[in-house]
Length: 139
Image (tube, rainbow, N blue to C red):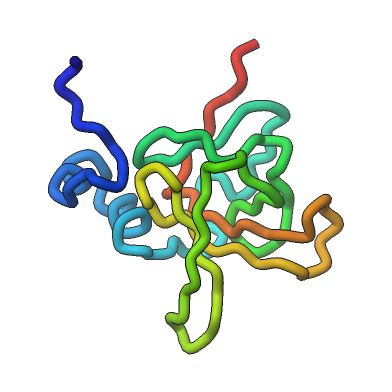
């Protein structure tokens, strides 16, 4: 045992507050949103690798599913099976679908379907850069 706490849905908020920077905590644990066009991964289009949850490290999206949606946040057309949970979000006076990490429950962003993007799924996972970390593939 390393003494590190398990980072999952049962992790107490005081542990998250110690582990995450304030802006990461705001997005991942308090369902905040970073300003459009400001995230470090908004315009990053790597050839190979995986985007993992910044909170717990679970793999969420492969680099090949990232695309330029022009929305101001990283966009993915599909997720790694089992890695993302979807929840109805009625805030802001409209119906949206929130996406969270299935392991730790961290807020990732929202998913929008049927917008007409030329992707295999016609789905856009609009994800905060503060919710994810990119890990290049080992070559």
